[in-house]
Length: 152
Image (cartoon, rainbow, N blue to C red; front, side):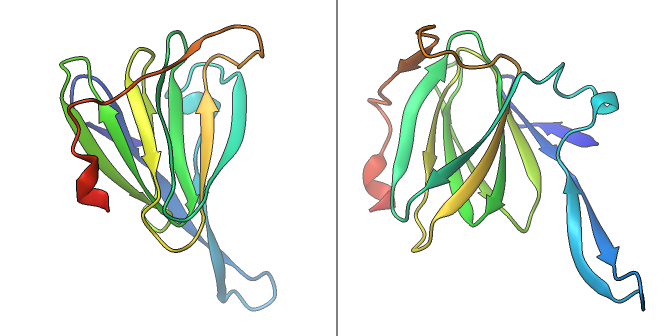
């Protein structure tokens, strides 16, 4: 698994994508993407996995997790992760289902998931700490200096 550092605040991991073959005549019948393996050592003992559906032209967040590191993989469609790093700078990461990447956002880093397309997008999220209804671990934040108008 290859990764490159986008900033000193989050990482983008390029994921392996493999063609799959039909068992009877070996024609290509699709593909698979490796999101996590215990021996890759990207996520130490993931505690939670969930699927996030983002409606067309909608946004989720921004918010941050005070204790949890989250890993985002776009299963279907395209989203833009808007990340406010520890230096207060905004990073925009376009994540597409046909270009497999795993975006690692550590605790304390604010993120919004934006879907600017006409179709719903689906994002698989893995986390190193599971969510509990009463833990108050998530904090809604505002990206006051961010230019939201550019996405209208």
